Image 1: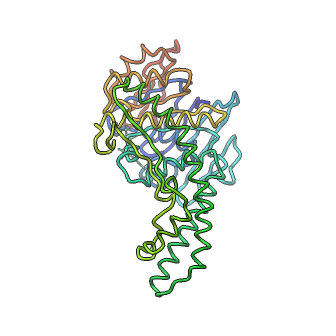
Image 2: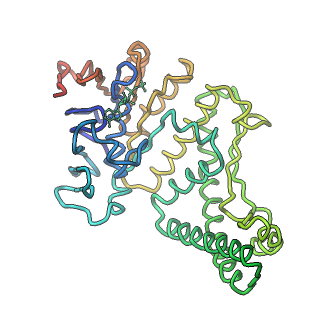
Image 3: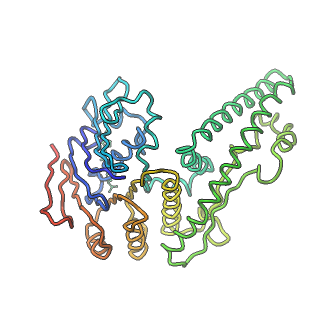
Length: 381
Ligand SMILES: Nc1ncnc2c1ncn2[C@@H]1O[C@H](COP(=O)(O)OP(=O)(O)OP(=O)(O)O)[C@@H](O)[C@H]1O
């Protein structure tokens, strides 16, 4: 699956842009702040009906304007697909597939699989456990509605149980029967979620390891492990055991809402001991493993967006990544960078079909390709 053409009006700093892409490798080159990431975000938006960076849609409209429009022409399973998104201040967002408007945006998610790797993803390593749970949940639930439903129900039961614990404390009462209703829900749903997360990590772990070893040339020993209190023993028993503590704390201290991923470099936490390049390598390997997982559960090949990939990584690692993603196991790729020289060194060695676009404040121009023709100049505004 790939995007053939993108048209943008008033999305963030992009006033009007129309671009035709290579089915394989596309690069956006330009100085800081010119809109390279915004172009990737426009493509991300067409897959997920929202920005990767800013969930407030009115802030994604170009300053001083009233609306934005994003449109993509795709080739998916050998069929053409036209995806339109229009958002006007104060109105509901409009999302259309081949001119037909979706009733619910969730119907669109999964149609155009895509993985973004961005510098902001370092929160996966540096942030709290909630970031890593969000990562697991968003990847699994993209293609598993049942899991999403279980997660929503679990969180609802957890909220009710916590409210009840607060009520007990405020009113100096204790009603075990009422609590048991929520305990039963948490146990039933929590065990299912734990099992699914275990399966997911079981699939992800070896792929992640393979990618890390490949990119680092086997220089470092890293591990990725799923941690859950539910792996330590029976959840129901743990809830009972923690009851007195939970009543004091006025919240539920055991359950899958405490799960985490343990990320290690050798015997130490990656967060504390990893260099910036090692953390970035870890992140890229994790996201590429995510790509493999999404590809395995989708009919269509996902698009890969690599934002600022050259930052913090040495030339050898970058070249390995670009070579890897240019191969047949990956599909269409978008790369952003501030420095054209990096790409000029790597691209000829990679040998894939490519197009390079120069992004400046106010214009995106094609700046090189290997499809035989003159670079096509597409002016912004
Ligand atoms: N709603 C908006 N209207 C106008 N400009 C916006 C809007 N939202 C973001 N911007 C601008 O977009 C620019 C950032 O663009 P982007 O993140 O795409 O830059 P970049 O080319 O990827 O830069 P870098 O190389 O630093 O990562 C900023 O100058 C920001 O102020």
